[in-house]
Image 1 (cartoon, rainbow, N blue to C red):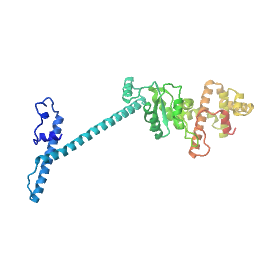
Image 2 (image 1 turned 30 degrees about the horizontal axis):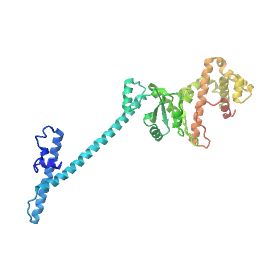
Image 3 (image 1 turned 90 degrees about the vertical axis):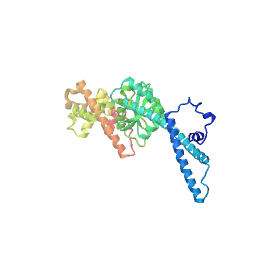
Image 4 (image 1 turned 135 degrees about the vertical axis):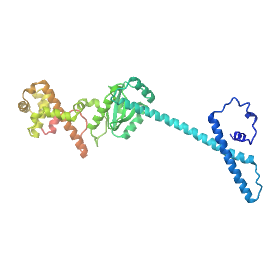
Length: 372
């Protein structure tokens, strides 16, 4: 570079290797010409400034102002050459890093776009999904499960553990993950991954129903309070389908209970509770002996209470549809009471903490809780 600069400025003759005749086949690009002009202007300016300062200094001390211009030019050319080389190296490094960062950002954006598309209720075409999946580097699986971790930190940890096998994003304000589920009946790997963590895991669904898995996982997460003092464990939507179905709309569940259990409204809370428990045991068991066994009471006690219920509900207890509606109403009311107790106990942070699963309690245990 130094030799080229000196030659371009006319301070040095062209060498044999630099004759124009031999370099005619090397056409300069516009960028090369612009760079050369910029460097030449920079060198001329520096040389002029340096020579003027040197002449002024010699004039002050009375020495000859003559100087070896070639020496000055070479010194300046070397300095500019070093500066240009460093500048080019920095530019190349910046371009390289920017390219790598841009590649990472593009991949992240593609994964975010794919997450949003999969969790949107509007169905996307297979071609658009395939294009997004290819850009994201995430092969489309036949089915997926949603995971709702307890905290954003755990979401990052799980994403790091699963590496490229997971899509992460935010759904309904919470960090969530989408994990391929090639075999919906096999969840051992998921249980192993989530061991010691509290998280809600959605049911395995086809890609077009991804939003459904996420919504039900979030609903189960909301229904399941934290369990301080107990070992954290994941909860699976698969284990609580009937509960989620009954409690998918709590106001509607309250309306159902109010509609079908209205005959019990005029009783005292204790009387109403006894008859509700007895009626549910009778509906589930199919008769007085089975209900008595579940409630740990004498069969005659069940028969006596059933006569009271027949007076309140009339002949509707013999109608299959009425019995079905009554059972749903009683189960919904019991589940809602159970959820309220669990959240209340967690809020108070008492030493006694119940296990927050939503497997329906056996009627006998419910009766003992109610003091029957």
